[in-house]
Length: 112
Image (tube, rainbow, N blue to C red; front, side, top):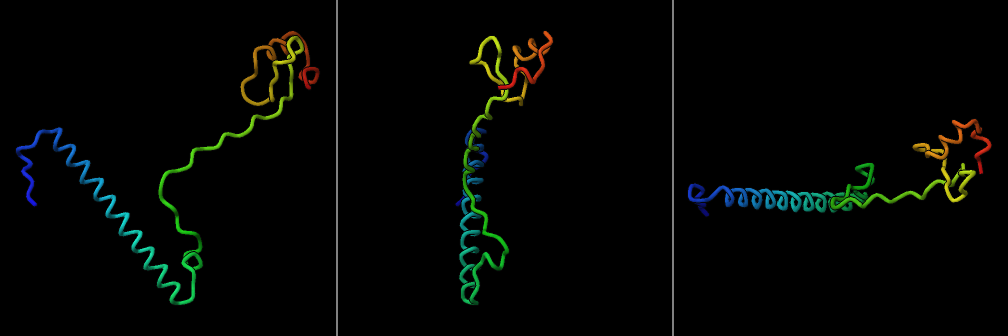
């Protein structure tokens, strides 16, 4: 299958290069899968599980799961002027907290 590269535009060459890279990755993946199946089959023939021989489970390929969001920390401090404004004590200090501390209040007095 001869491809005339000289007659192709740069855009066509780029598309061809992308297609070749995708095909190479697909074939390498198929070869890895076949090798894993063969290794697993050989291990079973000898009475072992492949994970016993490798010491860990084979790594799964594919998309990573999206990071799960952690629940917010419970509030530790509240604004004495507006109880709906709270702060967990971590991260940036809110302006109302800074103002209260600057006016002479103690952090202990702002605790919930």
